[in-house]
Image (cartoon, rainbow, N blue to C red):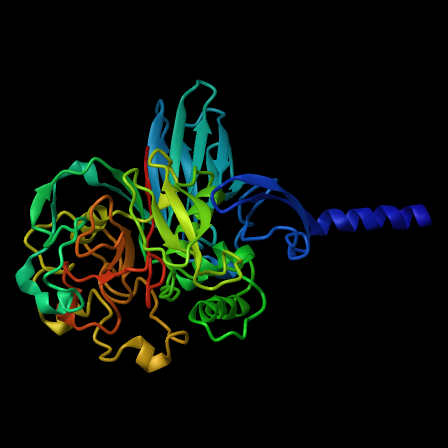
Length: 470
């Protein structure tokens, strides 16, 4: 009797225990932990800062429940030698892939839950989060079909055409843009204004269809967001509490609605870490690596090798003195993981191959017409309406997309973009493009921006990630 009970006890453990690989935020494998019933808090207590967990057996989400399914389609593909297809899916959807004239092939799926329907067909679940995945069909004749799956993303090859970059200065107020700058000052690292020009771009991208949402941030950074709020009154600790409260109102491993509200307060370091976590989760090499240092009077720098400094005020780092912790960020330009778009890339994505336009939708200054494409015109700053750390946004993807099929490229919340080598307006190394929920229509033009002088703080910052297809 005792022996039977002991065996049952082991069996129960095997059901509820799971082993995870522990990664640092820049992708280094630093150990493994065992979590019981999805509770990893005690197992992670020995680590001094934020980490990333990846299931040792698989990084695939479990099959979605029926209530979360939004569509089910079947895609038929002819068997061809080394054929490569790109398939764009929405989150929480299911699709069947079928090979016409299949010949006893084998399916290989990476990054998605799947069900084999027959030798010719497989059913795949897009899952709960934005991601990239891969499905292959291997025929006995050595013929292979590869399906690159983009969930909540679009493939946009910017090298396929020339692009108009820059903006038309007559469409906005120079006084409004430069009122905080001394007009007599000269900045060695500044290009101003950004002239309209036609340029070619040698980059093929997978791009988020929507701005990153609150749910995506919380679910992806779940293990790094603290459980308990802090009572200190400093702004950075209020920022911690903002995301702690979001986490409290979210179910771990729950589904993220494709039209969840846009994340509107993502400090730069958090955005970079989020990009790395997505890269590791999807099996790509992270773009960013981090090295912490302290300095009481440091000014953000952009270094000749493309690296830069970012202020680390975030729940991702534990430091005693609020205000003296910095992160030196190195950029691996050869990595295939997710990253923030560069300024020219964002401009090309926003203009979507069109020329002569001042706005995402064209040149119309009709509020009724512009409202079809952008949230704007609230008339009062979010901080005044809701309080700096109590603001709410709007659901993503509820307006019309631009000509590339990207939603909310204007309005709602600006998107963090990197400035490679030269700043556009001043000495900042990043800027935030696209405008805000409370902006007027005229301030949604391509020249509008929100500078990030401190390289970390930003009253309101959102993001959209890209990944280079190599």
